[in-house]
Image (cartoon, rainbow, N blue to C red; front, side, top):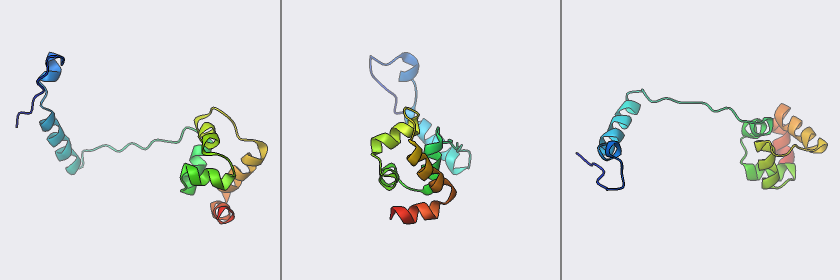
Length: 104
């Protein structure tokens, strides 16, 4: 097709790229099973527990009785949950059905 970048502010190697062909090649590779999947492990125990529950940050925060901002800080390691919150997190981890029923 030949869709090349034509812009004076673009470096020569970038201007010579055929972006459309790169997209077509990538789609062909994915269809052929050559695409790579990468599983990313949660960075914190709190994030792992929330993902295990299947709840969004908003729903999980509401179930714990904390704000979304507090939950986000716990997940990012900027703050640590209190004793009571740690207990609820253990329940959510060990007995997710009980936690979900209590949160409903």
